[in-house]
Image 1 (tube, rainbow, N blue to C red):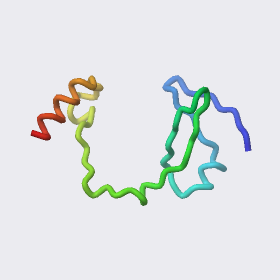
Image 2: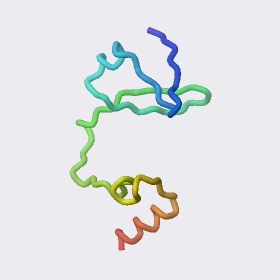
Image 3: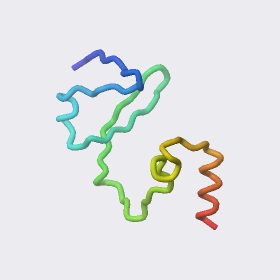
Length: 81
């Protein structure tokens, strides 16, 4: 199946339902390959997440604003000690 889709003003695209139903996941890797995008299903069940935690949450930690990479690195260095 081939389809044409238009990005929203936020840059979002919708994967057709028929494609999404073929995979038991709502998570996808999107990889840039030259002048194309490769979309691959990603199954979180296969990922060990017991040591994962949220380091930065823009809404919680920065009043809904983003953060510069250099500032995030400083925060991570403080956590790491």
